[in-house]
Amino acid sequence: MVKTPIDLQNKLFYHPDKLIEFFKTGNTTPVTWELDPTNRCNHNCIGCYAAGAGGRTNDDSLNWDQAKNYVDQVYDLGAKAINLTGGGDPMVNKITPRLIEYIRSLGMDVGMITNGTIFTDKSIDIVVKNCTWVRVSMDGGTPHVYTSIRKVPERHFYLALKNLEKLAKRRDELGTNLTVGSGFLTSELTTPTLVQYAELCKKAGIDYIQVRPFHGDYTIPYNIEETLALQDDNFKVYYSKNKYDKGYKKQYPKCLAQTLSGVINVHSVYLCCHFRGIETKKLGDLREKNLLEIWAGRRRQNILEELNLDKCIAHCRLDLVNRQLDELVNYPSEHKNFI
Image (cartoon, rainbow, N blue to C red; front, side):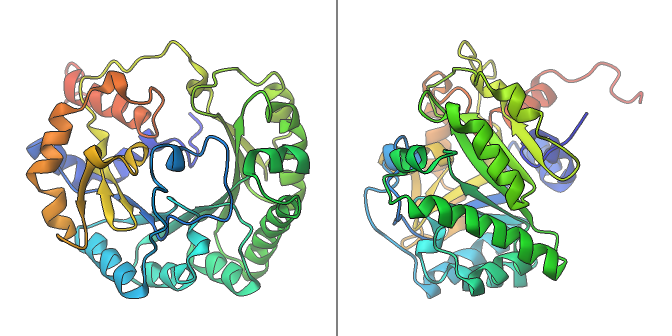
């Protein structure tokens, strides 16, 4: 089986301490936290799930003292990695490069999802030296489609591509292990430019592109085979084929994976990235309680008990992790001690 950075379910077994605690108690603390340094963004994308779910109902941003405090609390809870994402775009907050360095100084891994248009040469060097991976969202292979989705001037298209190239080139110059990728959401508007997008990304020298649908659009891209054919030893196309199954329904009774991955949207803590900005799904506010109190609190249990998975996004970010955990918990292998 080929393992890729986006196959989350395969990563479970690298954290036996968390799995042992989970199997003993039914609970643990996250391996990974998503942290949104800001709710501000310099793009206004159609279908942005963060904005659509209410994630940008305000323009809150973290100051340095708040960001450092929250990262320290994440570290104290035993996390191994922080994904800087949004919310808004992490690079809109000027403290983000410094925050990346601080997270790495604690020994945690750092990843980042960004539109890639706000980098400077200095911040690129910080990302290259400290991050495990960075993914630049584009969703268009031509300036026209890119700007139609993102509602920004066409120069942002060229800027994102140029910064992808800079990230890959600087990574090679410094000899670091940074993985540079880009994300593409397919739709009736974007799919015709998929191959062109892939060719541009390959030419930029990045490691991979990820292809998946806009939420609610299950049309399999007609040109996916042509796109996959561009792969070689240095460039991969990660095609999230499972997310195009329109008839899929979750078969597991509970969201078990939430205990391994948490979300901090500026000050607010959530079980899941898809709940950003939804007040009824908020676990707490870090200005009022610390992270341990929030994670161990009764409100989290109440939300879990009331959670109706039929109303959740079918192909949510942690769906494959949930499938794996459900199989381990509810369908254990016979003769498990014979390997």
